[in-house]
Image 1 (cartoon, rainbow, N blue to C red):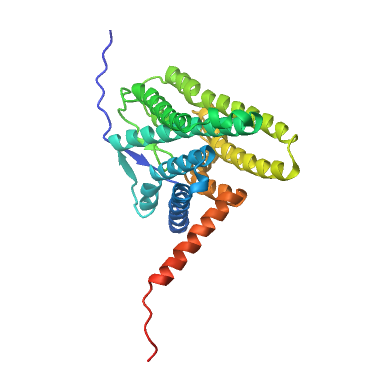
Image 2 (cartoon, one colour):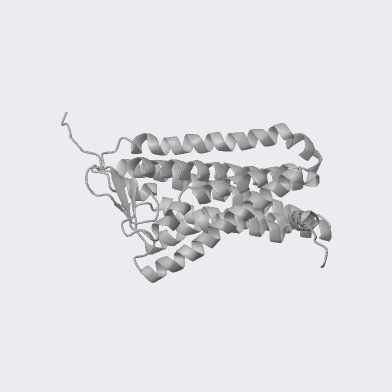
Length: 319
């Protein structure tokens, strides 16, 4: 057997989003604001659901876990990207690169299963309402969340088990702002065709099939809504529409990037920004604006905090 003596690269160079200094300053401000809004928005939803008794239901329990995952998904690469805007040579260690790949696939894999769980919750609530309390028990909800994290972990390990042993002996430039698996494995010093097929089957096809299953479930739910009263159907339609918008925003970029993993398009960077930064930001906005219960609870919590702050503010007599 022919033996290869490869020396592994110790770091990768990230090209980032742009080389323009003016655009980098602009992006620094914009993405810093977006990241702060993402963390605050998802934290607000998480705390609102936890502290509001009438939101202690399966749907909002799953929603709060989605907010948690979105905070994680927006944090695995965004802080480094923001700091790199002022660095001329953007580098990341080999271990740091592998860590980004690990967390990216952990959080995206977990979110896929969680979104499927949320669609299952809506299906049971609308199509099998008499069995809802039995099927969607607290034990089942916790089991769905735990299962989503287990599946996410197994998925990311399946991506890394071969990547860790690939020989990276020379090229080390990644044309993105973080280490994405399709871009990194192209830098390996061996033929990656078989690995590419494996990656397509485990990421792209799974994402596509999951999206089609979710699309089918929501079509069934929306057809079933027609049998309900106008008030109830309007509220249910709004909830399901919000869920489907989240599904579309999350799966669209993933499918495009991972079904055609070895084609480099400028739009790939835009889509990477979309599902790592914009989607976690838009999720709390969509659920807050389109869900009256969440909107009311959030406004009540904010008003209570403001009133409590006013009460604790010391008042001094007018001299």
